[in-house]
Amino acid sequence: MTDLMPAVHQPVAETWPTLARPRSNPVRRVGALAAIRMIAKDLPATIHLDNKSYGAGGPAMRVHRSAAFLDRLGQDAGSGFGEAYLAGDWDPEPGTDLADLLVPFAERFSNEETRHLLPKWAQSLRWLVTRSQPGEQENDRAGARENISRHYDLSNAMFSEFLDPSLTYSAAYFGTPDPTLGLGEASYDELNQAQLNKLDAILDAAGVQSGSRVLDIGCGWASLAIRAAQRGAWVTAITIASQQALLAQRRIADAGVGDRVQVALRDYRDQIGEFDAVLSVEMIEAVGEKYWPVYFDAIERRLAPGGVAVVQAIVMPHERMLATRNTFTWVQKYIFPGGLIPSVKVIEDVTAEHTGLQTEVLRHLGADYARTLRIWRNRFIDQWPAIAGLGFDDTFRRMWEFYLAYSEAGFRTHYLDDVQLRFTRR
Image (cartoon, rainbow, N blue to C red; front, side, top):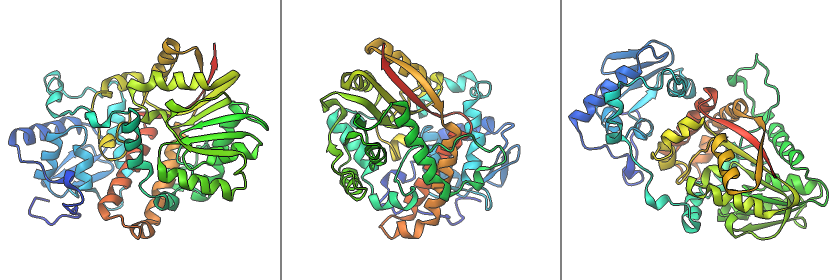
């Protein structure tokens, strides 16, 4: 298809100004096409572009507006591909699942042998199309509150439509996966129990029991706090997302544990007191590299003698973290401003250098997260009429479908992992 063909999707310009087509640049367009040709060499996927096909077959995508697609890629290597999807410049071919299409691309960049497919001269020019994270996404107290609010305060009702009844927004724990079970068979009905399995695994690892004093940093919609209180623990649950805190309080009251759980709109740096268990589930990704020492120092300071901390974290290989930590990605721009995914090694290094904590990896949940994300995305699509009724448009739908599929592909290819870590004082 060419630029003369009608677009499959066209964003509302006033609502999505960042998706305005970039100014045409023939040099960058040529460079983007050259990069596609090199990346697509032996790629087990197909890119249909300007009546030509690139790749070695497999899941296929079709570019509807080639000039706009190449201009976006040539302008911003970190966000251009995802922005082109939001803008409707390309789509998976009918019958092709979006995550299945993204898996070959993720594999190419997670595989050390194929990651550097561009020649050295081309790699040396990546700075021309790679952006750095903007200063306004700094994770000081004010910046962190703004960054978190942009995601977690989007709409409690929207999240309720696709999460399980516990409103747990992190990797579930399905246990030993059945090798015969494909992601396509992932069931929403199984998700709630798998999330409860995950919550129990965290509480067990921290030794939470009746009478335990528990601090939940980044408490979400209070699923972990409620589960701990049901064991008889006393819980302080903190978040900096105001709308999230309101629903968390309501859910705690509805669960009948309002006398055991206190929800506070509070930054982790401002918490005081001692606790037998400090828990934090997939919150470190929003802390920012500059504040990782502060985060782990805060955890250590809150631990009572003999206390245990458990952190569940999305991680990536250390070399990839080092290579991408100063770039501004599509996810940072549209989903998690100010975010950065750490590696297990950097967590071990930071805690060793800045705290008296020792680190133990308990379990890996990468495969479980891929399955969780597939369920969320299927549910999001199924519930789209209700979500649209909340005031979200089709570009928002494409953004969240891409985010969930992109993340699933990352976990399926081991570009990303999810780990539960236990910390005790050395």
